[in-house]
Structure formats: structure tokens, C-alpha cells
Image 1: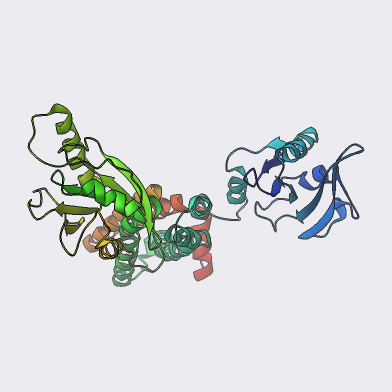
Image 2: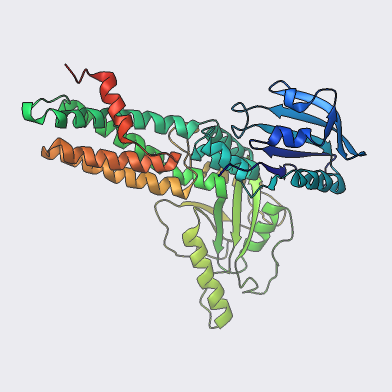
Amino acid sequence: MTESTIYAIATARGGAIGIIRVSGPHAIPAVDGIFRGRTPLCNAAPQSLHFGTIADGEETVDEVLVSVFRAPHSYTGQDCVEISCHGSSFILSRVCQLLADTGCSQATGGEFTKRAFLNGKMDLTQAEAVADLIASETSAQHRVAMSQMRGGISQKLAELRDRLLTMTSLLELELDFSEEHVEFADRGQLMSLACEIHDEIERLSNSFAAGNAIRNGIPVAIIGAPNVGKSTLLNALLNDDRAIVSDIQGTTRDVIEDTMTIGGYLFRFIDTAGIRHTDDTIEKMGIERSLRAASRASTIILMRDPDTDFPEMDIRSDQTVIRVVNKTESFQAINGTGMQWLQQQLLESVPTGNDGDILITSQRHKEALDLALQDIVRTISALESGISGDLVSEDLRQCLSHLGEILGGQITPNEVLGRIFARFCIGK
């Protein structure tokens, strides 16, 4: 079945300018049928801009600029047209209806980027980064998404994939000459290469802590006894009366959460019920939720005042603890004294990656990398045990397959075969 031509409004409603994007085999003639300009769009040069009007019969709907992109040099890899018109909801709806009348279909969510992926304009990591880039709210989120969209992860995985293919090709070549007992792959070199690949995959997998924190925000739990100033601190950090402040113990009985950007990073602050012994059933539930929130946080602000102690609680080795003594000369949450110091401590608690800007932000990528890591560990064990090349090759293929899932492509037998032909003369 021939692929349909799709359209969608590509800009937020309410702006001065609206853009309608059209993509598919009939994108140019569909728009040409409703466009009136000096040059018919069907005769337009690739990557050209045209001024004219959109007309419904004899009636002019709007004056527009039309951009023409011919396949494969477009976002989707198909013929594409973008209509820039005034941002009136009426005009946008009218133009969309005219496109529908020509036989175009309303695009579904993400369909333009999906077509870009299917047409080889980007891999899955880049396609996913498009959504992250649109959703970015901080400079850190923008930086990571832009790096991924430009192929940062793709390039690193392509390097790993290339080295794994080299190993697989050499081992599978040996199988073709098994009767001659020819060994093309030096086991010492293979072991060294496998260990290097292991370290690269492990480094990428470990970067998920930093990547996930940047993408979704760093969770920070504010923990302390009642009335030490936790809610006051939350309000001071957010510069807003988000939490109720009272001298009555047990005022905060539920978890209160809000976000703030500090130094380009998104922090998710969680105000919790004061931790103390109590017979109040509702307050107990709030304290239990506080402890659960603390267990999920990557950073804990542990608070006390001069008259109380820090609460005793289990802290994991991967959690950062910032200890704050409130109501002192150097720190007063109620008037903002010490806030600059606290913000600096929070920035220093942000997890950082070990490989430049290449950070894993997707749970899907993380899971696939962990599976690939298991495969390469089995490969190393097999090489150490002197297991036959066909079994080693199978573990390598599994590793390739899991890395391929991240990019959205699979390793084919022809690709491995092509590597063999490129490196060796089989017929000799």
C-alpha cells in the first residue's frame, strides 16, 4: 500500500505565525493545488521558498510563505512542504481542511519523526532525543538532548558495534575453515578487545545515573524533626509559600513536592513530615511516606536546629547528604541566610558522567546496555575458558543485537559476510 501524505500544525497555537507541515509522496502537488504563487510548486527547485496565497476556490484564505524540500533532503526523507501563515486558529484550521480535501491525512503524534527514522534520516536514539529537546526546560536538559540528537550516543555505539563486528567476523571465518584448523583470530587480542568493549559499555551504563537525573530532575528530600524549618526552607528555595509553616508540631503530614532550576539543573524538592515518635495515625502515615521519599532521593538535606539532633536514618552509599543546622547565625531559612551556600552544595551533589556529554537518559537504553554487558562478560569468560569460537561468536551476536535495539537496527548475516569479504579473499 502506498504511504499516505500527512499534515499537521507544527507550532503552538496562539502565536503570530503558524506553520503547517506536509510530508509524503503527494506533499508538493497537494499544496500546489491550493497555493497561488508566481511559480507552480511542482516546478519549484529543491529547498526553495515561495511567496503567495492559499486559496479556497476564488477566496483567498491567507498570504503565506511556502518552503519546498524534495526527497531525500528533508526532515522525513520524503517530499516535504511547510506552509508559514498567520497564527489564527481559524486560518490554520481552514488550511488543514483544504489539505484534507486533497486527500492528505492528519498526522498522528510523532509521525514525522517516525518517518524520519524509517527513512534512515536518524536512528532511534536521535528520534527519542527530538522529544527530549522539545520537552527540555533547563540548559542541562537541552545540552544532553542536543548531543544525542546530533548523534553523540549513535557514534559511540557505532564504534562499539564496529569492533564487535570485527571480532564476530574473524571467529565466524574460522568456522568456514574448521577442517583446516586455521585460526584467524588471535585469542589474546580478542580478549584485550573484549575487555575494552566491556569497559566502554559499562561506562555508558553507569552514566544513566547522571543522565536520568538531568532528564527528570534531581530528587532532593528535606528530612528532619518537626519544627526545624523544613517547610520554611522549601518556601525559601522556591521563593514561594508552597508549604504551610506553623509552630504546631506535625503540620506537614504528607509529602509536598515542587521543582526549581538551579545553575541549569532541575531539582525536585520534597518536603516531608517531621520524623519523631507519635501515636497519631495520620502523622505516622506521613512519616512513613517521608522515609520512602528519602529512600528514592539522590540527595538528602538533613536538617536540625540548635535544640534538636539530626534524625537517625539509613543512608545509601549512592546518596549525597547535606547537613543543615537551621536558626543559627550562618543559616536562617526564614530570611534566606545561607541559601547561596546551600544552592552551591546542591550543584556539587549533581551526578556527573565520565564520558564528556555522552550520557544515557533512557531506561530503555540502560536496560539494553546492561544486557549487552552480560553478553560481553560471558564472551570474556568463554575466551578465558578456551571455549570454541562458535559459542563465543553467539555471545558476541547477542551483544550486537542488544546494542542494535538501542539504535533501532539489527545486525544481518549479510553485514557480517560483507566484513569477511572485505578483509579476506575467501576463494583463495
